[in-house]
Image (cartoon, rainbow, N blue to C red; front, top):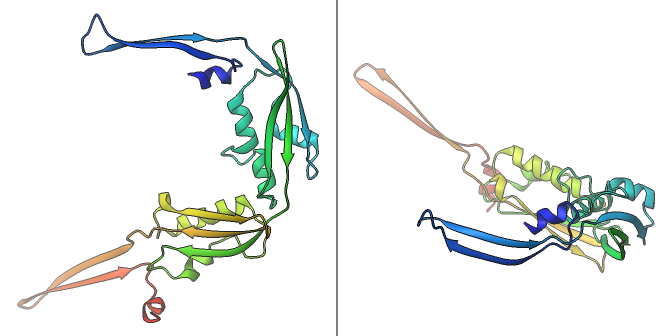
Length: 238
């Protein structure tokens, strides 16, 4: 409820009282009473940037997509800064270019009447390069089958988009549970590198074939198992 208020400018909204009582009309139901103090409605005024050198303040403001005079919206601010599913947020802009250690802290520097001035304090850090790329959880599928689908290579600048592309390619193989493919990203700020471990859970992709026929007085059955992602080389190299 408070998040909804924050989305339309009421950043100071609070719940001052609430109660749950049995309904007088129906003993199987309850009535919920909530008292809200909405407070004042606020608007964004000046948004400034400090600490940014890679991208200009003008470019960052365009990507933030918040205009002076827009109603204060904490959720939208966080989304456009740190996580937009479309990859158009500012964090994606930096991390797709290797700035894995990038951080930005929005700080209210002035609240006047119904207006809020915000200073975006940026820490860019240095670009991170990919160190080790590991694969785990594949007990049947050979490593090379997976590695040829990856878009993250040792020595390359880290890119969040490249990680997402790698995940999509692995999912399209059809050998692994798509909901359990997890990229474990382990940054090392001291060396400026990042190791990536693609954690996988294989799903059954085997097929059982049964066929039959009649020859003279005999009934003939033939059965076979096909392991779609089976690697004989991996089996015999154990």
